[in-house]
Length: 300
Image (tube, rainbow, N blue to C red; front, side, top):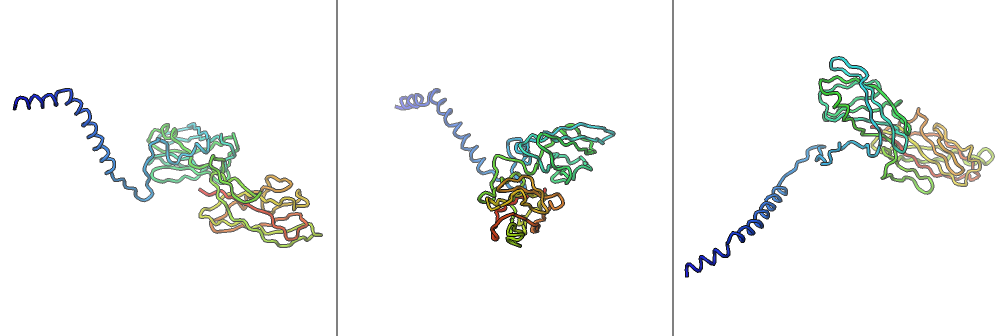
């Protein structure tokens, strides 16, 4: 009886059955233990730290929006000092109105430039455009110089430049602001500003002209470095070619509306502050109010 029992056990646990058993049990055990390890791992995020993405792309690199080609050339060098010409070429769908470039993970590099403002954050160095060299027209280039002092490989530093800001270019996720026919496409780097009209005099000059005060208020948390807008007056204008807004530059005018922007001297609107200007529309309606929408470019 005992021998029969032993033979039965051997038949059950022959080498083929045992191999199949192990083939199922061992992977299942490893899967369970791996899953436990993953779910039991604690990830701490302190302050403004972020979990690094797994794409290998710098989190601040937005060249998929900006489409700015970056080229460089070492103009001269001595000891550990390098004068570098950096060229930015605008291949986007719009003019660029500002730019910021980044040099990632360069703690042992000193950068100075008369053509940009240099800042530092978390071992990254940045060069920000100045007021006079921020704009790059479509398919045009801007070249500026910067001096680097470092014992590191300058080629490696320059090959890792990324673009982190290119205010006011078209993106694939644009928002429309305004209402009715006074709408603007809110472009990258822009925010909506509050615009209000006050009728000063209706129908003066023989009942042909309304005068308004246009107030642009920056109720955002950002300082504004440029602004633009649209005034839509429909068929209420009796002489659209003469409609104007003082203290602003008209960029396009039609029979029903005109686009305007800052004139350079009043481009900055601090957070919480306002600008006032005079608007004139030729109309027979002494109580008419046109539609106005304004957008502003955020400061870096």
